[in-house]
Image (cartoon, rainbow, N blue to C red; front, side, top):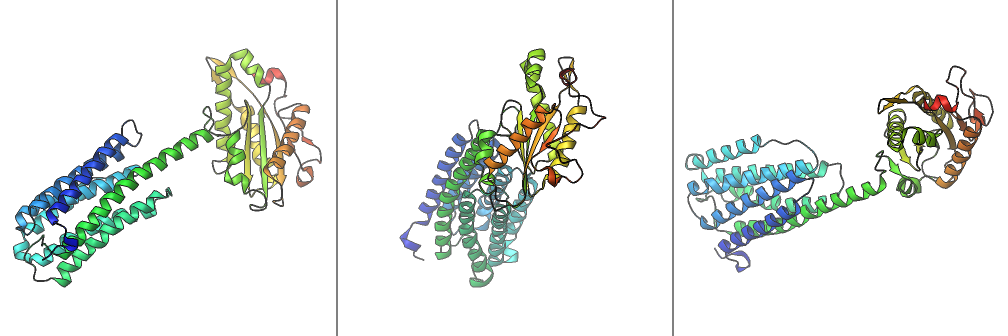
Length: 411
């Protein structure tokens, strides 16, 4: 039968094999020094496996089933390695056992093709390959990391899945009388063209999605404070959540925290001890306020927490729990116990009309009042919203708490 688009099938197999080798080399260079090493190793192994299979196929068009045992087995293994690469990229465990078992099942069917029937074996072996490809597509669709290149990969696998399903239909429905497991017909031409599209698109988008991951990591690193892992001041003022705060999220509360007499910690115990105190404070913030809220270190010893959808009462409850936790905490550094306390200012927007800078300024004023009143206490911008406490600018420290003296904060 005349080839589709007058292309030589053997040449097309070899061209596809060459493309696979080229991308394998590109993947190898891309993986040098990269954190996603297993992803790149699996991709390189997959492409080289496919390249060998395609080279063998180019020599065995219209040949007996026995000579197709190895290249068909390599196809299944190559797709299994692609599955492993994608699972590794998104941080999921994967096993080689299932696709090795699948390749053995395919080998068994090929050996029994003269008994079972060539057309049936042709349809079933292609159904196995189609199932592998569809499993990869489903995995990509379900991933929570929404990189745009993910859809390019889905398209690349969708093209070759469609041509493979067409070959399943050829064996089971269209050409029931076929006498060869690699017939030189128009279906093979379509499959070779689809394979070329897949190789180019999957190679390009495999590189692209890794670039997007690297860019996301760099952006995240720029947004984070290197000492605590919390967001930094620049990020908390520029994140979309902040921009969307006004009028879109309803009630919000902002908690501003400052470590009391922090300079004395540095002067008395050294800057490494001060860093340890900051890290300890950040860890307690995560524990008390939860990771779902937006938290940042915005200064040397200042922290901010944005509680979206919460009122002043809830913010005050969490702030008081945090204040007591810090007060009771014991930090040991270089054999010395360091105690410190915190002052807290809370602002609140019940209507969702205030901007982030407005909330921040109000919380800063409250923090100033808490410090002026003796430190180790909480001040709320709207005392009237706190029915359980006196209507005063600053809430007094409970009588059972440690006095907020400089000595008690440092010893």
